[in-house]
Length: 360
Image (spheres, one colour):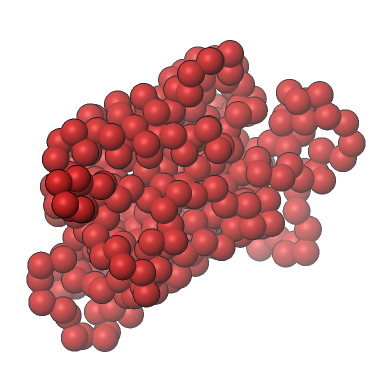
């Protein structure tokens, strides 16, 4: 299936030329923000499949809306408070002279999405919203190389049994175009089969990028294991009752897919739809009523001629889904322990039987 594809030189979304990613987080808060930007505005679309999303400026990404370029995309922890991270990014971009020109004023377009990490063990005695500053710090840190795991928007992320995190992956298509994904994985579901450490995305792995455990063995598709994430959340919040009953708004996986293949706004939307399959491959369950799962898709090839080759565009969607699945697995694989964690990391739970991957 993957014989025609290969990871880019960094195996990060920034293998797509012109893109930069910045992270900022606060270990005491156990939350953070991730910003994706470029030297010039880019075309973007979005698809929302989770039942509990939290977003800003996503309506303007619809194909029939006036906005045709975006200055940055923001993924943030902090639930609704985290939407302020985009305000920090917007103000910093305006100060730098970026934004849609309206007479003498420039208005940066910064769509964003948030995940819920307020019960991940952080201290929330703040009086002024800290995510505004985290957004500005993340933008200032934007670079072609960036860390994965318990950083940025993934700092407080968790899955059903393990810590989540920030992940990324890329693929180069046979024609030379690149597609990449950036994911903050904080799902209600699981990225691994409990007890085995095998990632649901095992069939999508290249090399040993997330432990080389292989494809999970067949299981009972009609049952789900006990969700320790929800049990931990309920214990922290003093709730009683069935720990598997669900925690509304307590989850969400956020993703950005990017390519240098020239795409129109409607084609970016279609790419985002295709990339959602990566969540379904990597998470069980995915797209639940209590997740806010969302995929942004962007094209940095805004000034290039359209590519008429439909086969390339078909392969692009497939590659984007593979990148999302791998990015989710890498997010969990790269997570590291922090004080007051409510769940263990993959490495602390399963790495005893696998060799440590080389440091980047």
